[in-house]
Image (cartoon, rainbow, N blue to C red; front, side, top):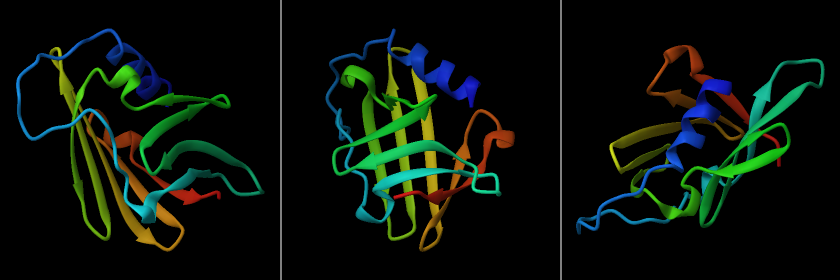
Length: 126
């Protein structure tokens, strides 16, 4: 989680070019993923990890939130289905990819492109 947070914090140092393509600079998460998601460690111990709203996605660490696309610096390409939400952020030499797959009513799987060790199942907390 610390590696992911560090990677995303470093994204805020880059800017993107003004080229025109089909990407946007705002997120539109599907309704099935909206809410707060976290890792369930059992014994009533959960750690908040992501929060999705109608117009944004955030990483949660130590009870603070950071936008996946801080200051809208990166271009966003989204792929949305009934069970999958892919986010590709690019610009300034940076390319980040997030994949979330719905595996149950209140469960999703997060796939990390940098390390499969960071792939986790998340439960809906609200």
